[in-house]
Image (cartoon, rainbow, N blue to C red; front, side, top):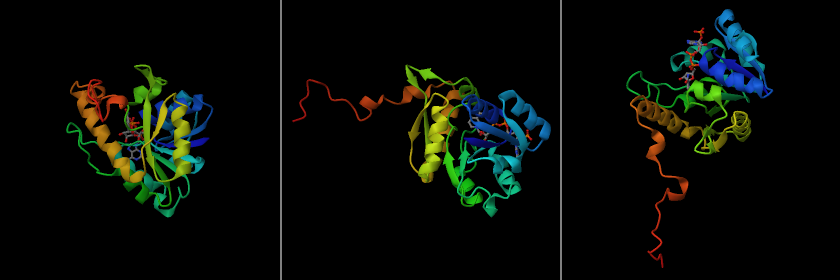
Length: 220
Ligand SMILES: NC(=O)c1ccc[n+]([C@@H]2O[C@H](COP(=O)([O-])OP(=O)(O)OC[C@H]3O[C@@H](n4cnc5c(N)ncnc54)[C@H](OP(=O)(O)O)[C@@H]3O)[C@@H](O)[C@H]2O)c1
């Protein structure tokens, strides 16, 4: 796949590095040519401008801070349809620092509104760059599950391929209207982790998700 990345920070480095290793052709686009080149050199990708990364591939990863999303998409003329018909992955988390609430209640839908005609998929926002960088991970014998939300089947499938390339398991989590749930989940989990709570302890395993019936109790 040809993948353009908007941003040359931690997520560009972590995810872009995994995808170049998996054989994808990646172009890192940044505001500063030096920083984009440094990131690209670290991960074996090409470097360019934000505009060049926007036009590069069938998939674009939006990897800038939430506060820079609008500026970035306007700078590459996204409202004019630059991403029309192509997959735009939104991994952003619009967290209010220290409060772990959402500064923007539905960022992925906002991205879709700004990038006219794009096929936005929310993904990769639930784990830290260090987790993506060190993938594949297996926790308690299971690969990390990665939920993705988007309205377009082809875009969801492309993202599922990129998730599998990390050694993770894609979890189709519905359309873009559900992306805000992933954003809220990230805010909740990050708040819990920072306060020393393990969110894995909050949920029963699937087999017990709706309760278990004691073997001595007959259902009939
Ligand atoms: N890091 C994580 O663990 C993690 C995990 C999940 C999701 N996320 C989300 O992923 C996104 C990227 O995070 P990151 O950790 O990669 O951030 P980062 O390391 O701070 O890098 C941010 C990148 O965005 C660029 N940028 C900043 N403001 C911009 C603006 N106004 N216009 C255009 N580009 C701008 C920066 O460019 P310059 O170099 O020119 O400043 C830099 O390349 C964020 O939305 C974050 O919430 C991060």
